Amino acid sequence: MSTEPKPFGSDFPAWQPLEFGSFGETELRPLPKLQKYVSATLARNWASIPHVTHHDEADITDLEIVRKAANKAHPEVKITPLAYFIKAMVKALQAYPQFNASLDLANNALIYKKYFNVGIAVDTPGGLLVPVVRNCDSKSIVELSREIAELSERARTKGLPMKEMMGGCISISSLGGIGGTAFTPIINAPELAILGVTKSRWVAQRGADDATLWRLMVPLDLSYDHRAINGADAARFTVAIAKALADPAGLV
Image (tube, one colour):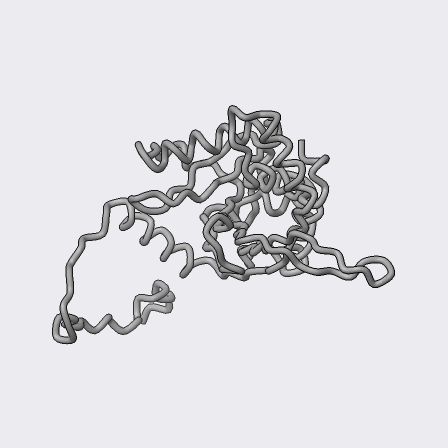
């Protein structure tokens, strides 16, 4: 009798078919080809990676002042917060290299990467694409903003070849332009973590002599692979991102 473990999910009960038309009017729309691929990939990643999501927030009050000034100085390109998030993530990866790695399950090892490529989740009419911005450590905020805009535009209109969505070290999924307070992003394997960002909000904080200070805070949601990263390191990594965002002068 075989003692080999069954593949995960192989003994799940089958979905019971339902005739939805018996409850009311329906319409059948086939899934787009891209959406079918994305669905299968996300299902695999969610089922096979033990996800944990750590939640924190960052003060971007000063960053927004710097960003708006940069937009005035460079009207030829729209500088969004995403460029600053990428630079802050690079600083955190440099401080905590275990996040800039991938699991080598065959050899029970971690592959540490010496480059800094960041995937950016882009919502397109056909489904989710994650183009990779490469060598982020050597690019300025303006250069990153220009590349983000170009990749996002091509992803939404023409699509992207697979090679432009490979080689990432970590990814960012930003919903700040839409809304939300928190979510659990799914890791883009073989990466070990992904940062989710939602809508910033003004928060009252206690200042000197009990004065009320209003600060612009942005929620951060870091999902990580618990096989390779523990909770304490995830908390330190997220704090490092928050500290970098609070000091925009250091994000060059």
